[in-house]
Length: 218
Image (tube, rainbow, N blue to C red; front, side, top):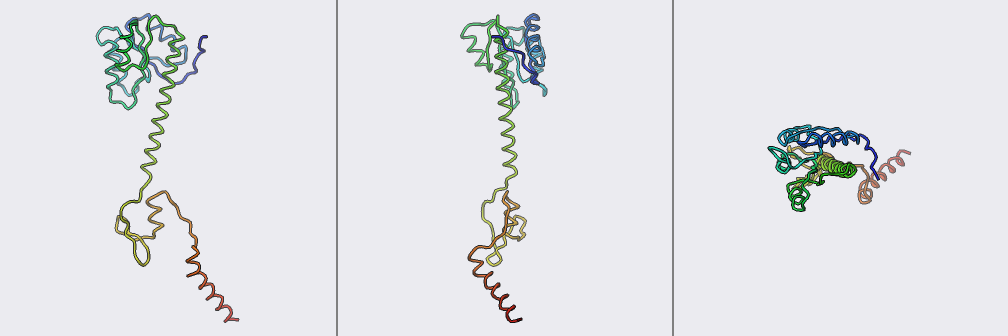
């Protein structure tokens, strides 16, 4: 059953083919499915586009082209110093099993043999789009975790503490209350209370002293 039109996703797709008819056919199909399309007729032109900062996230490559062929283009793209590489789909007349293995080994993510059905091309592009979205989500999650780790200040090593007042000495050789130091070096926050031992030792005698003062005043 034919796949319906894809809502515009913002995905930019590069189409690389030296045959104008094939290039226009793929371009027209992609635009009809809601994708933004960039085209190139040579491997050299395509490489320059994919090296740019605003490079498309997905590229459809022909294999047999004059100059830099699709196989070499695929290898060069995989070697680009970018954290996230574009998703590459070969669309080629090379149909031997060994050709498919060679193309995928060179770094292609998918492989379609010409002549192809438009529905198959659409389905393969949708798979690439989903994988790119997943990759972007994972990259964002990694950035969030890195930012969280950068914010967390860990307490480690020896911590000088006064034997009498229990203040601690920080890295700048200043003495401060334990809770102030910990709040400044971690995500912890303090609320104050009285433990049973201190209540018996300090609070109850003070309460008794105040009670005796009131009785004496009476």
